[in-house]
Structure formats: C-alpha cells, structure tokens
Amino acid sequence: MSTPERPTASVLDVFAIADASQPRHRALVLLGAFCALRWGELVALRRRHVDLEAGMIRVRGSVSELNNGGRIYKAPKSEVGQAVGGLSALDPARGGRPYEAVCRARR
Image 1 (cartoon, rainbow, N blue to C red):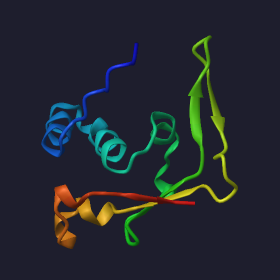
Image 2 (spheres, one colour; image 1 turned 135 degrees about the vertical axis):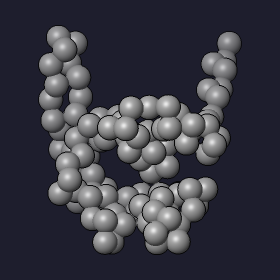
Image 3 (cartoon, rainbow, N blue to C red; image 1 turned 90 degrees about the vertical axis):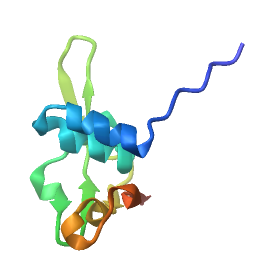
Image 4 (cartoon, one colour; image 1 turned 45 degrees about the horizontal axis):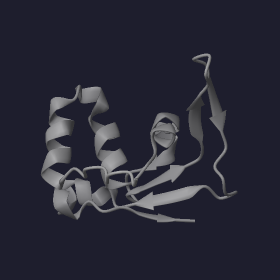
C-alpha cells in the first residue's frame, strides 16, 4: 500500500495562512513556504543571518527538539551552510510580487 500524496498549498493558500497567523509568525510561514526552510532552520534563524540589502538568508544551523522536550542547536550539514535568495521577491518596494517569491538554495 502506498502512502497518499500530501496536499500542497497554493500561493494564495500560503498567504491566507500567513494572514491568519499571529503577526510574529507571518515571516516563519512565508519563509518556510517560499524558501523551503525546515522548521529547525527557521527556529535557528537570527537577525544577523538575514541580509535585506542582498535579499539573502544564511542558514547557519538548525534546532532539534529532544524527546524530553529540550532543544539542541546543530551546525549545518555542510561547512558553508546554505544561502537562500529571493527575499526581494517578497518586497513590493523592490518591485517584487508574491507569486514570484521562489527561493533557490545553494551550497
């Protein structure tokens, strides 16, 4: 028996979810959906990892939750981490449009 495919949210669905979320969670929803960041990578992000001028995010690690409820910070799998671009596509002031918010990951 095969596992059924998970439903995928449309771009409009993602923005509806983001709009329905608490304001402090909006960026998590948008980055997770459009930049394909995992939950642990999102939780580990810090302001210094975000370069708004270049429109880039540097993934420097990940947070994992342990069975006892504790959390540990782990370094990225590669030495250089992961650079994610495409933030300008979310910024209307830069001429971006939400549907163009496709991030690309590079190692």
